Image 1 (cartoon, helix red, strand yellow):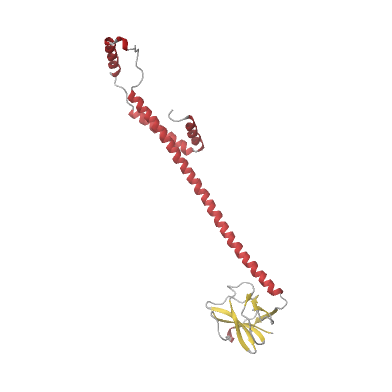
Image 2: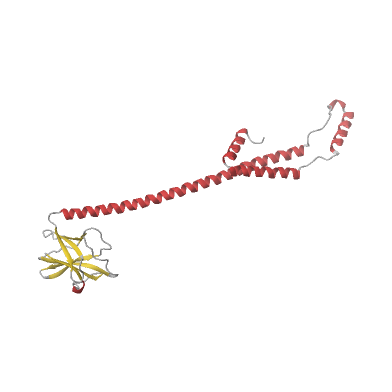
Length: 258
């Protein structure tokens, strides 16, 4: 009777919807009942007779001021006050338990939804990375197709030397702009600290056109231009990673004459 009907209905609804709240309320009710039974205050046995004697004495002295009393059946004021505070405390604790239980439920739901959000965010990040990689691959493919379809570009197929049969690489060479691109190779990944170096044989002398590592490069790779002279051949050798001023002839892999 110490909570409004609306509050009582809310507590009952929460107890029905959430078993843990119902269990907590029932446990508290049993605890309060046991407490009331243990600490109940009973009026003294002589209290009723003392009160009746006092009333009779007062009635004898002032008969007009005393209304007739036939019996005393209500508990004393102290017991009523104690029971009132017990009920008030019980209602407050029930509401507190319900609030704590609901907070626990909401926190659990929050963590569950946050976990789902984190998974979605991670998937979105991975998808973005994959799309970025795919976009880069498409751009490389478009650039390669542009070079291959350019009528001014001459594809020159370099084939493996005797020590490396079956090796292949293609140079796309524009004699007018003197631009060159390297691609379509089946060269193996170079050893640690090594890389391939492309050479142009210009007027009988080797001219470096840059380094190439098939493990790091995809598609057609723009190489250094040959500024002057007549290009007579192209070749690839295996050199130290930073390159060499002159080709190591014993490490030549492929070559082609123009």
